[in-house]
Figure (cartoon, one colour):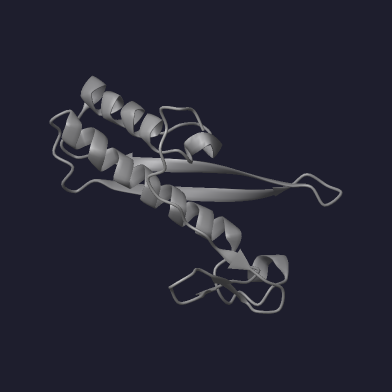
Length: 133
């Protein structure tokens, strides 16, 4: 951490074998499991769904901040994130993510500037391929 950085928030989650959940201190556990497409029960949330949820939430919060800072009304805005898991062979997996942004009150360059600022604000957009426009 650089001298100019300061912690704003910290979170913790723990996944343990055989529990079927991820535990977050002070909160109810989140049920987790492998998707049925990959031979799991399909019960609970899988890591890709959790990442998609985190990405959609983070990017949307950043979009609202960026819109508000630039005088754009964030009403009606939405972010939809999609994650794709790929098999690279020999138990090597990869994923990529895409996001669709709806910002009804801005068009053209103004919309692009708000989205670019939101991408700078949200720290977990590095997996987006390609970035939303």
